[in-house]
Image 1 (cartoon, helix red, strand yellow):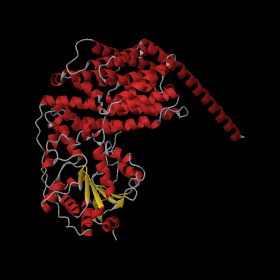
Image 2: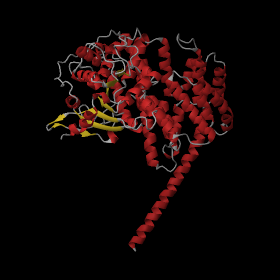
Image 3: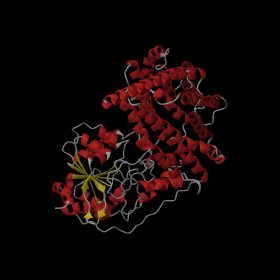
Image 4: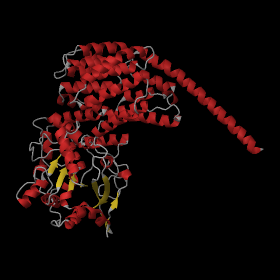
Length: 623
């Protein structure tokens, strides 16, 4: 009996009505559907919306930054068709890319017309299998936007599937031909599923004793992972999940094999944590469904049809592409690329003044030119579209980062208390919390921070936003840090790591780096070897420099234990390079220099002791 027979036999015994199919884009790749895979669709979006001429390669630019930071794709199986090999650079997240284009182009979701071929792609042999599976009483859950399964069902049975049989958990072109409600942008998915959608998906998972996953990457971090992680430990007890990772034919035929747990998608682990029995297997997907069709006495899979690929044409002007590229680089935290674009006259003629102001503000912030940035926000008339509360927040932020903590707190607190609406108060709240956090670490200001923190935390709890997911995460990060400081306890290590993962999933390199920096701070251990610590700290500085953040690179020298890694000239040079206040520079320098000298003296003493011990050992061995 073949390995494939062993995989199919338990499903065959259950019958089609007892199995739910869960599919992703991979099942729509075959001819004649020929819908683009993630990489092809991402490349299509970059070429259409962000490249303004033959000299621009925004996709290559982003991939180069991913490579520089070591962002690689997970390897599920090195024998699979199209599987990520070690060192394969991770793709930009499609939902982030399309979301940026959608915001910039507007016009009734013009950017989402990139997906227009989903409306008319003809069903392929896998879609026809799923149609017959539904007719036999099965159920289907899909991440796909296309309605190929429905059209295959209508073609075979002159009627659509039953309303409870097929669930598109990211929406469908059938329900929204204008595409605006599809889960194709980060804004549509980052808050997770609405309560009704979560209940429908959970019900679909639990309704049958077996689930077959195919053509699906398992990379729905924001909604599916969140839903599964919230399930009780026994929610899927007795559930059998067979996850088919597409594989290739070898010279010996189909090479069916199990994927070890260490290489399985993260979602497989979440299903297992909810009580399911999960097996991830590799082999040709069509062969798997052909065997299942035979076992269930469904029509045999036909040969693949003829290829029908095409690319929708979306009108985009030269100026719109420039504006979209600047917005994309900002969304990904690519400070150096933003700076390069702002140096070009074409950018300023293509970008609205408000967006140009924000881009300049972010650039000056990451360059450490905070005095200059404060003057930019303090003087002149605000560009149309910028609320004055943002001016107040940026001025307060500059005071804070320069080390002028008391003026920063007074400024931010006064403007927050005077804010006309809760949304305006929230704009100021994160920065006010960071000031209190900083004060708690400064001798002479700890008591003041401790007195002010309880009132701030009560106000923060009352103002946590529901709709702005990113701001909510940042405010919760401030809250966890202040509560830990008030309790005199270290902050939970997983807090920064969770936020770092969040920003990695959105594709924001600078956000990921900031929480990587936070993780290094939270997990500092005095007994860690100097060499390991130095490698981590210098690597963090180099990664900041690679995205163009001068301030981030210098901040690595302010991490706990920095005196064990950086020299006095390196440290003092960083303080001078950035526009800190002079008293703050003095305070940082007067703390670092003695610690560095003491560390060098201790290191010299350890070296002398080691040489003496070695000499004594050598003498004894000579005797």
